[in-house]
Length: 189
Image 1 (spheres, rainbow, N blue to C red):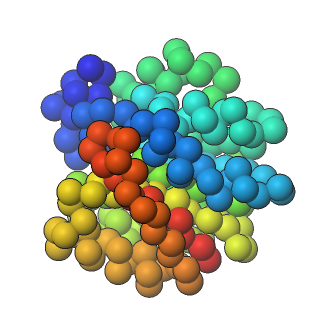
Image 2: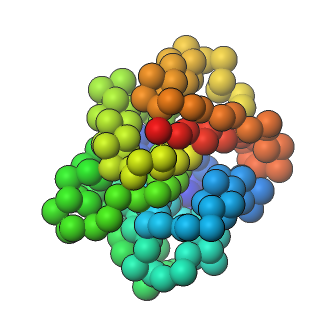
């Protein structure tokens, strides 16, 4: 219900009416969980914390995890649900500056639940630039797209941006057990 309210109030900041399923969440975390040397991880747009829950189960230390959430109502919800979280209430386009200012390490992984389809091209470009300059060498950026929207011009254009920004982009098979069904992009520098 919380996501529906936020979607209606802030459609440019909230891209879904339902939280990510456990199936989508776990698929997004595969590159992180497969890595023995798990480093610093950043989650962009955690929303209600559906993916956050699984990240918290995998990290070694809470200091190895940062969330970026611009929606103040979602920040309040996350603080209540996960009081131990480090939440930066900033736009994802400022990730690199924030990490530098706070002297935080370059993340090995950045997981994104951002609603790319509602962002203008310029904002998409700024966020992808911030992500790619923030990641450590050989780092991985993971995001997802809803299956029903993949044929849209904006989705095709976004995939092209991923291909230009990263040296390798892997696409998963559809995650049918998510509402709506989705695919995941694992993007490597």
